[in-house]
Figure 1 (cartoon, rainbow, N blue to C red):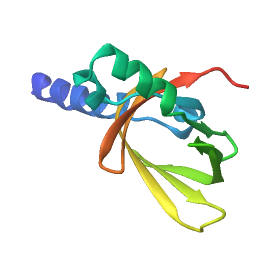
Figure 2 (cartoon, helix red, strand yellow):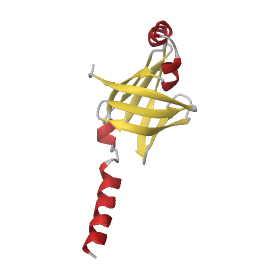
Figure 3 (cartoon, rainbow, N blue to C red):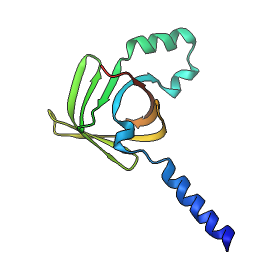
Figure 4 (tube, rainbow, N blue to C red):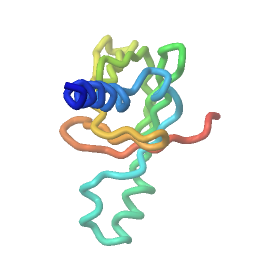
Length: 124
């Protein structure tokens, strides 16, 4: 019985210890890679990093700014389980990013059918 209770407690701890909160993911993030690029040669990988500029600023006040390809989208965000929901003010549409892996300074998210790697950057 003691082992059974220990197993239940361990399962509950492990299930909750990996859950992210809004405070955990708030901050500035920059696209640093796509797992698909690992198959590319080094020169192509470097060109990809120079060409694809993508930043996501998730502010603590639940506002966001996403910059990609010289365009900026802003609005509000919320964390719903493992999904980051971005509501764009201009288009009134919601986009969802699903977190598949989270570390303090790196986050893998599923975006438009592709996994992207975001790395935390210092605040501006």
